[in-house]
Image (cartoon, rainbow, N blue to C red; front, side):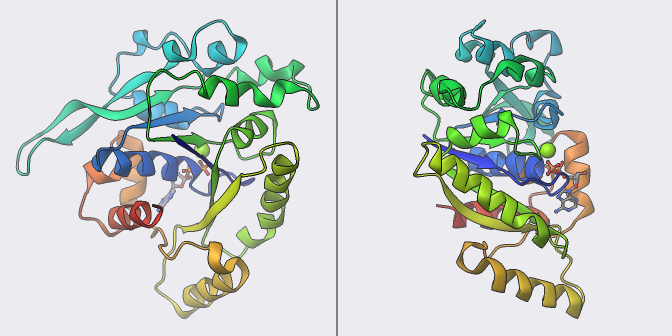
Length: 265
Ligand SMILES: Nc1ncnc2c1ncn2[C@@H]1O[C@H](COP(=O)(O)OP(=O)(O)O)[C@@H](O)[C@H]1O
Ligand SMILES: [Mg+2]
């Protein structure tokens, strides 16, 4: 199993959207994937549990981290709404995606966390106790370098950094890079940034293209060639809890995600 953190110090750059749709593209291609919601805003938890009986979701990441529950009892298989065949109506069926949900209290649980001890290994150890052999785990991170992010990065093999296609995105980049370096120094030496992905790209004006050129200059070979286009369909898909690949498979933004997932291998 490869573990990928989707991380940037900034909020609203598409961490959750990318976590969700990467997971769905992997599901579509018959890979099994675990999404770990490390952000106490619980956006990916809400997205993936929309079509679930809410009373069933009794255990969360907090229970696993506190040691109150086996991590395997805190994971839920995600039902998705999709067409089984072309031309048929959408129905709710089980996917190969599982979610380890957050419940907004993780911060309180981690208040006694000490930065110098074995605490940084908490999530890493839990991930080693998974019964299921997932192909990929995706950690949807918080927009800060806090305890949750330290645990996520320490347990990861790779980091994906979504950046908004906007010139202000370039400011926060150094912080992200330094945070990854810090985690390498704390013991996860093999942690690797596999790529910066430009999200919400318009591409209609020469200014957009100048910006893309600037991103290429700055990020060089770690910038994914695929950019994710800005599209209202992305917002609609997030709102109704249906990943793009099952919501509007032929949309340009959907195809961006498909291409992006293929390039990651
Ligand atoms: N490519 C896109 N096109 C249009 N809207 C997008 C796109 N990517 C993200 N969004 C919207 O931007 C907002 C922030 O995205 P989100 O994934 O929640 O960011 P983060 O997790 O980094 O805070 C959401 O409302 C989402 O629907
Ligand atoms: Mg988010």
